[in-house]
Length: 130
Image 1 (tube, rainbow, N blue to C red):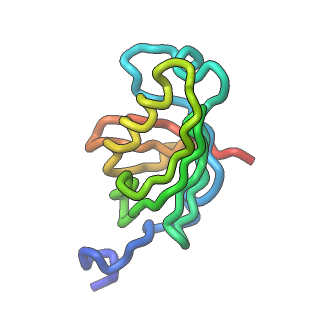
Image 2: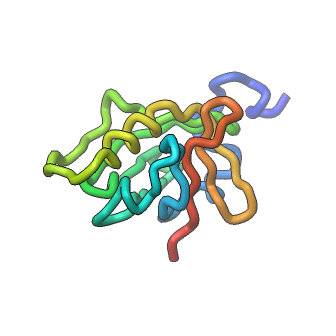
Image 3: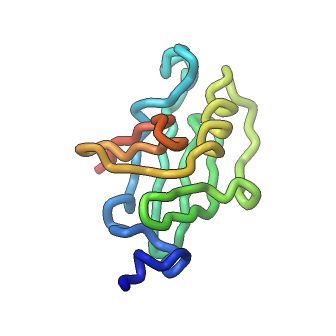
């Protein structure tokens, strides 16, 4: 049996290099609201480090930092321990972003896009930043 067959044997992603790095938001499930209307000043971005299980970035307004869990294709943010700055934000973008990442329970790579899903529904799409 490999470690991947044993539940909880690894707390890191199958291929940690796949999700490591800097990511720019390209899609968010938002009920038809245009992304530029959600984030009028800045688009969300994040950095994932599977060796420390740390996520950090911007909601499009405030900075965030916290931990995530990635086992095989399962993925979730530890929202209870998420640290967030608290500047006033224009529009509903930040709230939608935070509510959406809280729903994520798995990920997949599709071509050069990192997709965060809730079960089989794509919630967020990210492109790698250079």
